[in-house]
Length: 216
Image (tube, rainbow, N blue to C red):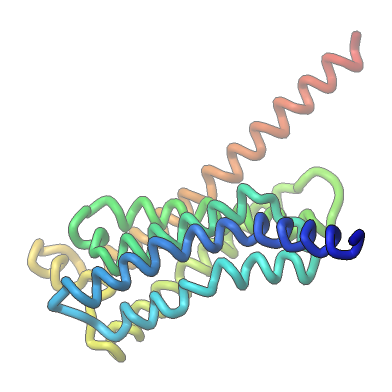
């Protein structure tokens, strides 16, 4: 009886841990059905993106458990939210093209989230206050990730004959086609800076509070 209770408890704990991934799967299934039944202009790249994004939250949670990374639950939830915003809402529902600021929002969100993830992964294996050079390395890594994504969009557009970088719209508006690529990288950089500056301010506030307590 005791073993049965232990198994039930472990099952409940596992379900609670994977709950963000199951919740993320619901909008993915819904938008896939809507895209397949209502959208006349369909692209293979969209189906591939949906196929990849569906198991991604489960993989993230599995890696977090397997390697005991101890990523906070809020970070896992933010990752799942980004998956929904970028692929389900942005690509499949077409918000990247219907709402002009959606692309900016998602890239800024990515920069913030990537930097937050790097911070937790790095300081999982290191104690002490971050140094300026460590902040700089995290920022440069986020810039690199954003650039790699733009390279992916460039090659994916050629392979699947799509326009992931919005070149047609920019040419119609008389805008340099490189604008979308450069702006996306800059926005991701801004998102990373928001996290780093916010974190630095939080550390300063905490140090000031500790100093006041010790001086009394």
